[in-house]
Length: 231
Image: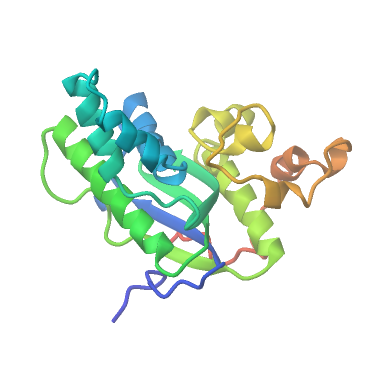
């Protein structure tokens, strides 16, 4: 019997809250490098790959061995630009949240399988371990309304504050997330903020996305059952 929220028949153009955590709730990010590597993999997968430039580079007689190996690796890597779009993310010590818009059939599954496999290989090699890192198959659930979509981004961006309630505002920027991109304080080309921000005002602070996220009331009703990490 399939695990709840682990379905693979994702709808094209569907918006999904993706979640996974460490085996036995253990940490999957142990230092800043781990966070950076995980995000670096996402950036590579979701950024346009200039195949022609890479191939032309390989034909250069002046290319040193290390650069050639790097170009070959980049050329062989999977790429999901145009297949999925990442709207929001947050990385916590023992779990991660992603909000993804799937453009084509199987886009999410292929992306998550590539990301998970590559990160586990990195993690096991770095920490000299073997075996599984994540607690089973990642979970995914469909956001069915615009309201759910908006509150999911709020939930994802507020996740650090929920985990570290004593730190409040600092917690929102303490953990790696897409929140600063939504505030216009950081440019991340592989995060699509446009759709969510179109619902908010750029000139009226009371109607801004920042004010929406900082509102302290719990958004239980609009996203009940699709936050996943409480299962």
